[in-house]
Length: 256
Image 1 (cartoon, helix red, strand yellow):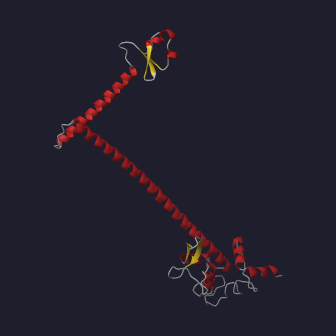
Image 2 (cartoon, one colour):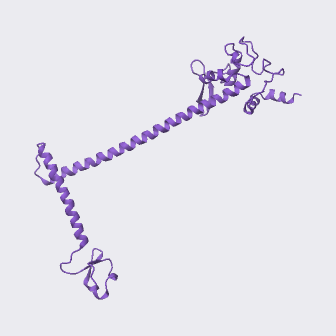
């Protein structure tokens, strides 16, 4: 049986031959003259190869320096210059990586911001249209004619207390308010339109004379009791009208 030069434990060696091994560097090696540690030999070969590469770098770098009129006779100085250049290259590579990461982060942030803007724009349009359609349904107004006007003259904004609400705007793009300094809702604006000869023709029964009955009154298209004609209204529109006109809704419910 061939003897191993190096073993981790003497348990791997026949008891009669254990005296031939000595402990070295945490292992047991064969104590024989001329024996070669193959691990150390491989390490020496790797070191020699690395040294050859480093030496080649030094020679190449020296040639480049001499080409530029910078003679270097001190090997230590030359080695220092080479290592400094490699360090600078490594730092430059790291900076490039960081810049790449920052650019990717900026792209992701830009995409997120654009997505949030699109979401808010869709939400704004939906909230304004919802209130506009309820008001137009209540007053029998034409969505095709009046919805673009309402969307252009309204906004969905954040209030001072952090809430978001639909506001009707004036000619200066400021929130419209009544004499009591209260915000004018879209429903009140639509009621104004109905009595405005410029928009009256966009309502059922409107004649453009400006003399139509106020919202909730007994004008054209409404019952004699003052209640609106809800024919064709959706359940949501009916519910919204009841919330806005609780007294009239109770009167309608009590009517025979």
